Image (cartoon, rainbow, N blue to C red; front, side):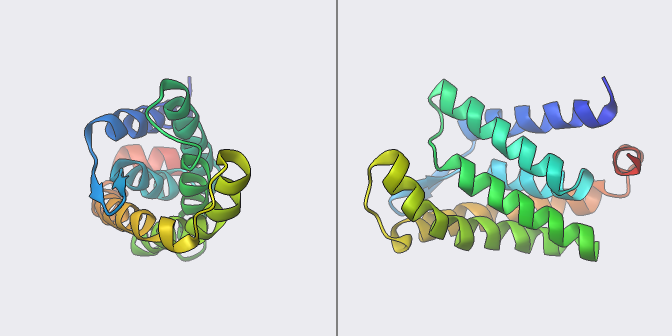
Amino acid sequence: MTSRKTAIAMFVTIAVAGSVFVSFPAGIARAYPIQHAVNVLAAVMLGPGPAVLIAFFAGLIRLITGTGSLLAFPGGMIGAFLAGMLYKHYGKVWLAAVGEAVGTGILASLVAVPYAKILMGTSFTALFFMPAFLVSSVSGALFGCIIAARLKETKFAHQLQKH
């Protein structure tokens, strides 16, 4: 197994396990910041494609195990994509964190409205989703930014970024 595949599996595992152990109340919902931290780390270490793949598999496993909802897909994947694209184009870890927060906290909360209506039968507005999405994504993105800034200069990070 290549080190990139190992890193993808490791990030999925951290996101799934982290969602079980690390959460806090965020208004009407719960914040699960570890997924957002993983999105920033994956965006910096692996790029936008793998970051989206990690968010998808983490969401799928959480859905199957009953520890997540369908909202994990737009919430995780949009933030991971934007984080990866901003890091890829500008090379700044803090922009990956901003991408995660904007992608999940704002864009995904807007996408969640029709998505939840069609797939979950709800009729909530974006203002219902946005506060919880923002609290979760901003807190996780900050955590991920701190870790990514420290890890990006390691031998492991350089090995992952070569491929």
